[in-house]
Image (tube, rainbow, N blue to C red):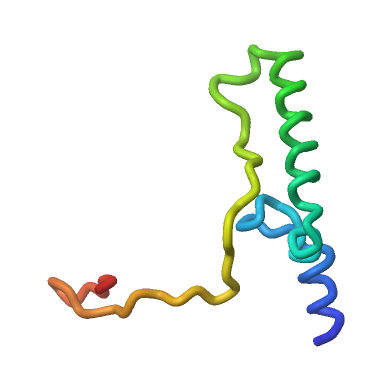
Length: 85
């Protein structure tokens, strides 16, 4: 389990964290990493504007995140669909 936790927190880049590791986020390094990525994307867009049809990827740091967020209670809806209450 230790090996998995080490990989998950130190190597795996999470999509919910804009592809930084939890360790990078926890240590506050995510802001600089995302700023560098934004600069790379903007430079690429300036060099080859024909390749871009809109804005570059949003590299703004995300706010609060949760491992297991509380979900609204689920209730039965029409035709037995489960819907958030």
